[in-house]
Each structure stands twice: as structure tokens, then as C-alpha cells.
Amino acid sequence: MNLPIIILTTKLALLFLIFFFLFLYIRVRLFKLKINFLNFEPSKRHKNLVELNGIIHFHTVYSDGSGKIEYIIKIAKRLKADFLISSDHNTLKPKYDGLEGYYGRLLYFAAEEINTEFGHLLAIGINDEVKRGNYFDVLSNIKKQNGVSIICHPHNWWTPWKNFKVKGYDGIEIINLDSQWRGMNPLYILLVLLTYRINPFYAMHFLSHKPKKTIKFWDSVQKHRDLKTGIASTDAHSNVKITKNFKIKMPRYEELFTVARTHILLPQKLSGHPDADKKLIAGAIKNGKCYFSYDMFGHPQGFYFEIFYDDRFYVSGDTLNMDMDKKDKNAIIYSGIKINPKRNTFIINLFQNGKRIYSSKNKDLIYEIKSAGIKNEPKPSTSSLQRSAPEPQNNISRSSFFRIEIDVYFGYKKITYLYSNNIEVYEI
View 1 (spheres, rainbow, N blue to C red):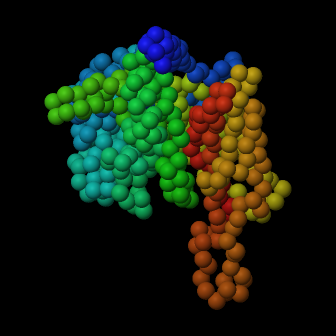
View 2: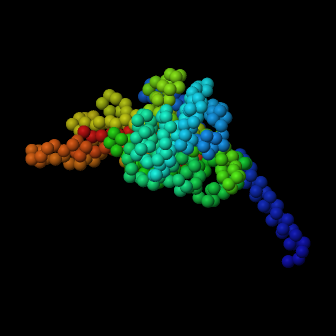
């Protein structure tokens, strides 16, 4: 091959690479995924509930975060959050410094992320600082304050939870954005680093993968009248440590606060009194009156999930007692969301005890629970009852736990967009 041909081939190769990288840059720069929602009209069954969206678990200059509370509150207000809960490590100093309260319509209050021998425990709704230490001592202190205890990032390889058989806690962080990026394929982590400055949305959308291992753990620990709440947490620090003295303020609070949120359902509007409203929000989280979603793709419009039985509606966190003797009365599950199916295919998936049992494509889900569909342990015979004392009711009945996941499609790309908490159906 002579020199002119070599030069021409080199120039063409360089030109191809320039156009290729320009194409990739434009594609990343313009990348956007948004769910197309229909006009929002609340479900008839949800008109009596007040829905609030909140940002939970982030760190500030009071521990290992880079932002001041006042600065972060401005961001949350701009992003239209209803409540904001910080969680600095082993301190409630933001509260002691008088920073809790309303900022316009936004309520901010401090929680605490506490070190125990099993891992980190998030305490929400407490008024007095809890000292790090033995798990059971920490848990006892939280309970004395009527607080909420949440296991933090259970499958984070950096700081995982170490005792999955322990009891007593109220909930689990199902989505924790710090764990989401640490658990990504190294190729995706590289993509995030390379594209973050070009388009933060493109970089952050890789965090929306389904945390399957944590969801499996969550499903496995549901107990009768002891439903473990699932929430989404940002775990934002905006402070990546590169060396001992060099840190980068990324990802920024602005980007992480848009990715995932927890939505709570209240029976009444907030009063405007910070202490009372703090208790209402903490109580809703504790009792599972919430769901969580990847709001970066759009604020969930019109989502509902309920079970109707014997002239009453039950929502997440409730226990429904199904009477075995009332054979003519079955429970009916209803769930829906106001997504435009012409623009985004969506599937509402119903799970029972961690297994998907039914799906509804592009329309509301309606599913009838028949008594025979919930397996029961055999009741002891009359003769056995005569020979010994009656068995506790827990031994002759069976619980089933129902929850919803919603998948949304952007062409061929699927995102598990929304997760509800559980409703228990308990046969008596």
C-alpha cells in the first residue's frame, strides 16, 4: 500500500471517529425519558386520602455530606417536594440547631443514621439523639421515642446489613441510590462518569434498575400484623472521596433528589404545626401507608392500590381479616395509574408473598381473591381439641401479602417504575 492511500485511509478513519463520537455526544445530550400521563383525576377511592411526596435520607455538612441544610432545603423546594428528611450519621444536631420546621409549604425535619454492630439503622421521627452501639439498645431507644426504625442499604457491598434474621425493626430501604450505583455493572459506572457532565439525566437513569436481592429479602420478612415498610432513599452525600484530601461534589443533590421518592398517604391534610406533622409523616412511614417510585420519569399520576372486602376498602399497611365462613364474600383487588397507553406501554403486576400471580396490561387491574386461593394449614379435629387445649389462632390460619409493581416501557426499554407496600389478607 503506497503512502497516499495510507494517508487517505487514516483521514477517513479519523473522520469516521469524529462523526461517531459527535453522534454519541448528541444522543447523550438530548437523551430524555418521560412517562406520558393522562389528565389527573383522583380515584374515587383515593379522594379521601392526602398524598405527599418526600425526599428521605441524605447527608449534610453535619456528617459526611457537602451541603448545608439551608442550601438543600432550597433545592427541595424548587423540586416541589412536600417533606424533606435528613439523616446525618449519629447526630441530631440539625434539630438541636433549630433548623426543623416549615419552609414555605415544605416541611423539613432531621432523622439519624445510627451505627450498630449489624449495620446502619435509620431512625425517623425521634426527638432525642440515639447513641451508636448495640442493635437492641438502639432499637429500644427508638421505640421509646415512638420513632421509626429502617434498615439502611441492606445489600450495599460497602456497608451491608449483617444480620437478616434479626427482628424488631419497622422497615427496609428497598431503593437506596448509593447502593444502586455501587451495585451497577462496571461498564455502567464508567458510562455514568463519562456522561454525567454532558447530561446528568442520562447518567442518573442507570440508577433505576430493580434491586432484586433487597426485594426478595423484603418479601421474606412480612409477618402477620408486622408488615415491614419499604421506602426509597437518596442517601445523597454529593461528596465523592478521591483521595484523603480531595473530594468531588457529585452526583449533586439536585440530580439525586429527582431520581426516586417515597409517597405517603394520609387520612387528613397536614396541620401546619411542625411537631404534629412530623409525627403524621413518621407514622405513615411506620405503618406502610406509602409507595415509592422512580420519579425521574414523571410524578406518578393517579396511582392507587386497594382491596375491597365486606363494604370496606383496605390500603397499603392494612390487615384484612377474611372470614372463612362467609363463602359468598370475596375480596377484590383494585389498582391503577393514569399513564397514556398510546405513548407508554405499562403493566401492573400483582404479587402475592413475593410471587407474581397476575398482570394487567395498559389498563387498571382488578383481581378477585377467593378464599380457597389462600392456602391454610389444616384445623385440628374436634377430638384433638378435646384432648388438649385449643391451638393459638396463628397456628390454624395463614397470611397472604399482596403488593404491586408497575413496569413502564420506553420502546423496548423496560423500567420497573413503581412499588407499593403490602396489604395483608388474613384468613380467620
